[in-house]
Length: 398
Image (cartoon, rainbow, N blue to C red; front, side, top):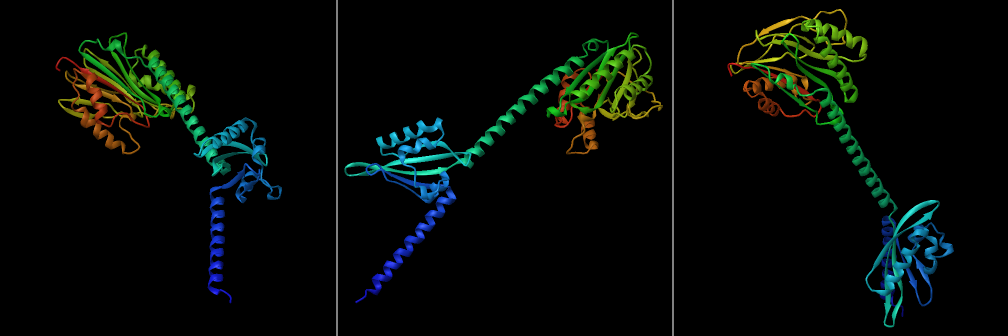
């Protein structure tokens, strides 16, 4: 009599085994790994299908015997295979090693984990899992290279920033000669951009003229980086030389405009230039496309009326209008570049309002500390642009 139930159960077990084998093969392909066994008694070697794929070996040629495996890896990694086998035979804990092979001319990274197959009489062989980890190692090397390049870029940026700041400090020394003027206090702050690439051509000047007046100037050359700093140096040094003529600020601006047009091609610049007479407390000045100074008097901060004046380097033959602002004891005059108030995240008018509010508290007798508080109050250093602030306090009534 045929045992129908038993036959059905046998068929069911065979189906389950086939399904399990299919799933195992699929898992090996997904993980790019396979298994292998080496029988130390018979010398027989068994590979799963995925190991053949990993090694790029035709299954008809059969697996590579364990003693021959070192000859199929990179010469420098052959000893790693010997140590791995020896460690696996000495203990029961799985051991692993990485090595490289060449498959179709391409270097591949493999990892092999081995553990002994034991029997009552001792070790009978080794069981191993081999995985192709080329993609993982390649990604790690790419990440490592990216990190290395990033660190090098940061180091270069830090070095460039150091050089540019050192160059600026050499070009724009502190106006120590003006700090000892009778009845006048001068303080300056240069606030570099947070981003190295955005260090630019902001500049200032505060120098005593031969006739006793004080020349006060501030400006901004277009562009960023070393080219802008170089053009800024040319413009500022030209102004220092031209100021020795004693000519008024509007005439100096006209000469600087011609210099930019003919000697600093593809460049524009803004500037405020003025003369402060300590005896009469009269500030005569002109501007070229620049924000007007701020006057702080009796706790009220206002922008001075801006005389006519076009950008330096914009056009030729346009006159610069002179202006005169009488000052008195206790006043603070504030000259600044647009990097102080302009931000990518806010309108410039908002920045000007913040500056006017902060300037109300500027003490004419302690401008150094006052400028620090002012810069902090309006948002601190600008990530996108550098800034200069030049403060002048009229003493005698502070």
